[in-house]
Length: 251
Ligand SMILES: C[S@@+](CC[C@H](N)C(=O)[O-])C[C@H]1O[C@@H](n2cnc3c(N)ncnc32)[C@H](O)[C@@H]1O
Image 1: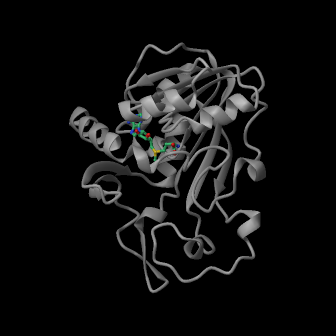
Image 2: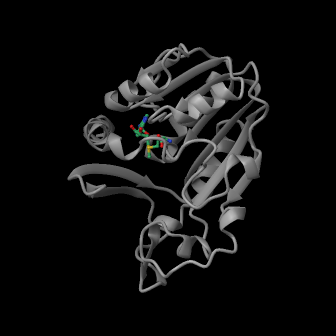
């Protein structure tokens, strides 16, 4: 079943790859959320070995290279994204793998200073198995940082600006999206509660250092937002976090 979901999602990610070109990439942690410049979650990247799960267009790895990272590694399900990222990272000798983050690709263990994922971890079909692998890749003292939709956010809908619960936050499990990005791409995502992420991190040996429930960035704080029912909007972000960001450490 997991293999079938991964195969379906892989085809769909290839189809929609062009929508994700430098969109949710560092220094951004997510739509209408504070950026790395404001949150300062990263330890100094100079000389570090970094691994991104779901690297998309590769712009986050490029950002870390520009900040002095020494080795760039990444895993992404989509071959199309791998080809795009290969171009974005041309000349930087990246180690890019096409595959699922929840599967073992023989990456080095006790090796990375930083493993991170910007709006991709939530696509895993096996959260605990993925965190176990991430823990193994990290050096002791290394950090894992990820951002994802705030777990309540995906249950919210709005009509003429009035926000309501479309589905129960209590319902965890798979949700099928039949027309992702309007491209007829079928995608399966797993809904999880905030506590599910936190407990899975703790159970896999991480110490949680920071949890961010996003606010609108400084430069947008005083911008009045027009009423909007879009999935991501400044209007909604003024009253509810779009994004959660968690920084955890391997002790
Ligand atoms: C929303 S995009 C974000 C990517 C990146 N932050 C960007 O904006 O370019 C999610 C990425 O995760 C990848 N992905 C989805 N499921 C995955 C999985 N199970 N293992 C590895 N990568 C996955 C997709 O191919 C896609 O490139």
